[in-house]
Image (cartoon, rainbow, N blue to C red; front, side, top):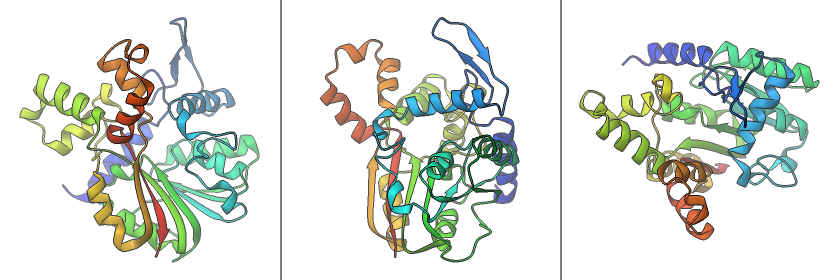
Length: 294
């Protein structure tokens, strides 16, 4: 497929279906504990609070007393320095970096995410540059940023290697980075995408691996987005190694608690924590790739 038409489809799909974490992907209705539903208005403080609550709850192991995601983000080292986010979504992570004193620049491919992140920053009185931009052609000078990150975004790029090279272009030599990409060697991929959808539902008879992963990853109940291709550690080691030093790739596995409940209802009560953590470190849905630019 033509990459430019892919990007247009990707841009349009995410503009229609932003990552609201609602009961239905892209919508602003949320189910309460008593089974009732609450609908929020896009762009209100209450809406952003609900988005953040959901997002934080799914990633509890990464938070510390120093802040949300402080186990993976070196906030203090980059106080007052230039930090770039590729794929800001609705602005939760960019907000946290700004609150820790970074000079934040955040980009996204679609105008809805840019507008909502700008709205968030305005409501909170936070400084930051929020721009609509393509990861294949970032509008920045070589070596402009001290730190760069992307969370669950670049596996939607129709040319991941191009996006990564462009990402490294705008980092300073020695600048640190962190990138989260979906893991193809995961329980979620093997079970929900390959086994349930591909085998039991027979989807693999008329969908290739890329089409299957795209349709049944983000927004699966709405038949997914136009392009999602999870990666492997080996592939990312080959891609990142020539560009960086001190490369580390780890499986975060923050999704496994939910997977256990789906695969084996009630499992959290009888599977030992040490076993669940071991599985999470091997077969979780998120690969965290970090290091320093050469």
